[in-house]
Image 1 (cartoon, rainbow, N blue to C red):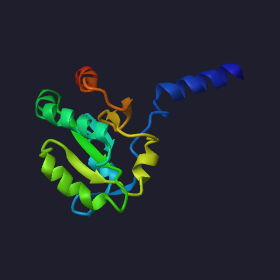
Image 2 (cartoon, one colour):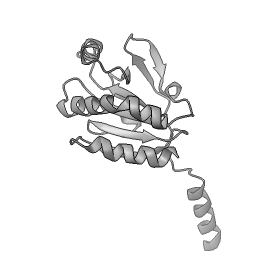
Image 3 (cartoon, rainbow, N blue to C red):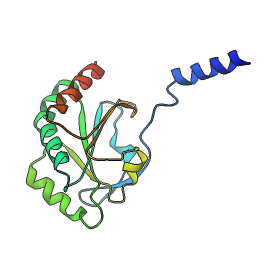
Amino acid sequence: MKKIVLVFLITIINSNVFAQNIPSVQIKDLNQKIVNTQELFDGESLTIVSFWATWCKPCIKELDAYNENMEEWTEETGVKLIAISVDNTRSMSRVAPFVNGRRWDNIQFYLDPNEDFKRAMNVVNIPHTILLDKDGKIIWQHNSYTEGDEYELYDVIKEKSN
C-alpha cells in the first residue's frame, strides 16, 4: 500500500498538478472595461506580472526599470509585461493619468481595485513580480525592489525562453 501511495504522489508531482495556473478573476483595463485575467495570457510567450500602486515608490522604480528594458527583452525573448495596479477605488482614477505621464509604453496596465487578483495569486506585499511560463504557471517570483533586480529577472527570462 505504501508503494502505491508513493507512486501516486510521484506521478502527481511529475505531472505539475501542484503548479499554479492563472485564476479566473475579473479586473479592468485603464478604460474601465472588464477583462478576465485568463484572457491576458496568449500561451505563446513568457509573461511578467507586476503588482504595483501609484503610491508605492519602489513599485514605480521597478516599473521604470522594466520599461527601459522591455523593448529589448521582448525583441530577444518574446516576453511581455502586465502591470496590475492595486490602487483602491478611491485612488484608481489616478492610475491612467499617472501611467500616461510616465510614458510607460512597453507595459500593459490593468486595475485590481478590490485586490481580488492579488489575493488569488497569493500576493501579500507590493511590489511583487511574477514570471509565468507559456502555460501560465509561476516559474519565478520576487517581492520588493532593489536597483538591479531587473537583471536577475532577465537572466531567468533568457534561461526559460530557450
